[in-house]
Amino acid sequence: MASLIDLAAYFAVASAMLVSCDILLTLSDEAKYIWGKPWHLTSVLYLGARYLPCITQLTLLNINLNAVTGVEWSAGTCREWVYVQGVMLQLIVTAVDAVLLIRVRALYYDSKPLCAVLLALFVVEVIALCVILGNVEPTILVNTHCFVTEVSVLYSLYWIISLAFETLLFSLTLFKFAVAVRAGWGRRPVMKQFVTDGTWAFALIFLTMLVNALMFPLAHTPLAGICFTWLLSVLSIAGSRLLLNPRRMLGDGETVDTMDVELTELDFVEM
Image (tube, rainbow, N blue to C red; front, side, top):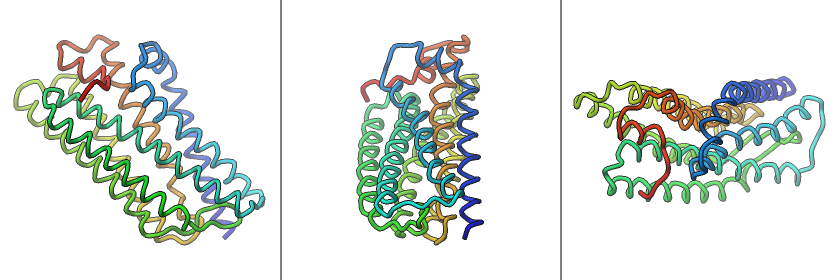
């Protein structure tokens, strides 16, 4: 069991280092293209998507590293950590899904009925995820080192719902891209970058969420949550870069018309 705890702790440290390096790599662009512009809701979403995962990982490192050194926690303290992690997870997932929604709105800016339906689905998704977390968290089992060792199978539904919504948004992005290619403007640099970013972000989020959906209910050891911190890193990197990269292209003078500006500014206006 000790070796499993060590392995889980090493994974947590590695994922925290990854997101820390990514923050350092994008810090100058972030200052210029995010904080150097007037505040919008997208600025708040960037803050949540980028830094809430980092804050959560730092708190988890406190648990993971103490487990390696043999420190044990009280049952009450562990339960409090579980609730805090659940709240932080929901805030992060909501922020990243909102970023994905904004990107689709930019593609379908002239289709208000579709945007209204997507916004309604987003609200339903958030409510459903909160309800699931509220029912699952009291049943989560942890060991004396506060490592999650077992959760209800219902927890898998949390990831499935989130994946379903994100798959819908990604499918709409691909459909619009196909339409754009046929119309002749899909090969513009800003559109190609927009779809490329959406593809790698969706692939990474889908993979890490799927692994968590399988590991939590199936692995009844400290390895149950071994990919949780990696999911936090992926959400931080993907969520922030999906907002930052388009604005960088606008700042570099790549945009040429109204549609390009829609795709690069990504301001959350009335849907």
